[in-house]
Image (cartoon, rainbow, N blue to C red; front, side, top):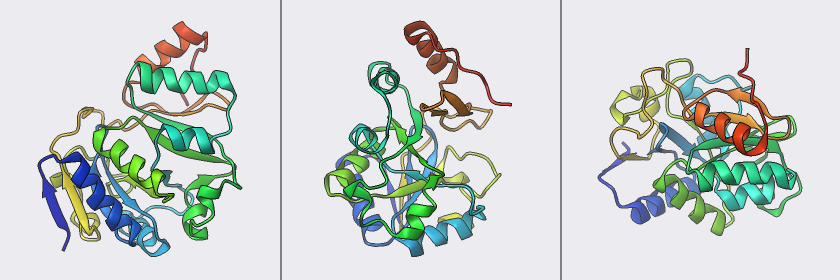
Length: 230
């Protein structure tokens, strides 16, 4: 049975989740965008895919911060400036997709199965600025050279979950730790999760929360007009 933590103690909760995932466990945590499920070991990631009934061709995302984004993503300075303006200066959440440095030392100890399921082709996805807990956890993991991966805490195609109690029992059953901070900041009736953009091509992979604001920043400050997919 999972250890359920309610209330907010960012530093202590980040440490608890970090140690759980580092040691091969599964954690469900609150993000500003939605609840997410995290793991590191191949066994734990397999448990997540099975519980979510997730297709093997759908990658997880890396648990990262600005430091990991700068270290792993291969982007020119203009694209990096776009990411910084959106996530730091305008304080908006954003999933950044870009080619990555396959030979980076941070990836050396990542299990091949986990690595394979955390990338798509030559790109990987790092969600930035998704809440204090996630940032503290990512800072702790990156500082210790530990790469973790995550996915939305919901059974595939069942919709984004903005409260812990709305997550399906079969997914919660595999968690060793749950962090319940109540309703997510960016909850919305459309069920939108993070906006995802491939910054190597400026292609919108997914329209999510804060999309209009993000599109406005890119147009007004960089002269880039995004096109909605589909």
